[in-house]
Length: 220
Image 1 (spheres, helix red, strand yellow):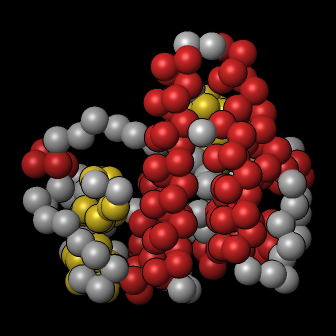
Image 2 (cartoon, rainbow, N blue to C red):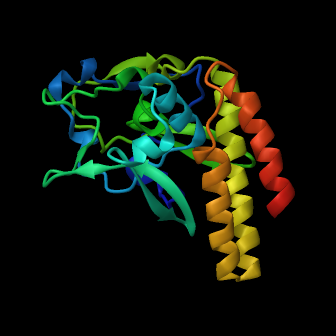
């Protein structure tokens, strides 16, 4: 999700790569789950998130949509996000003890928090959101360890490709000013990247690259 941010107001003023140390450690949250409540539609799921959830929960995207995931328009494009439930708007995967029931395979946005990403020049870096997490004191941890993502370089390449593909599509569709084309793209995007099952036993990244080429062929 693209936001206009003044990093001087919300961060420590630094930018980080996956090999850098960042003061984000929170002693396993100490039972706090504030970042799992009241998040609205902000925890947007990318194809890797859904692949990982489906693989570990042995559920299809349609099954996840029935209770834990919902669709919402993000910058004109329909994308899935984690669903918040009840008066306290708790994440669907938060258990009765206030702990994440999918912690080992939680989405990328959840893994980053309280880090964010800033995209520039066809690349991105991480930044620390200093006002988001109430747990203190914070300890230093390596960004790669904090994310807990295997094959971090492949993952970051995927993140860049996904972000800049969506950005290019948005620019193309805005120029066209064709509402039917927006709908057509959103439907096709959901079909190709989310609803069509991935082969769980095969490499995600090669499957994603194949689908990305197909979408670019159609719309770019």
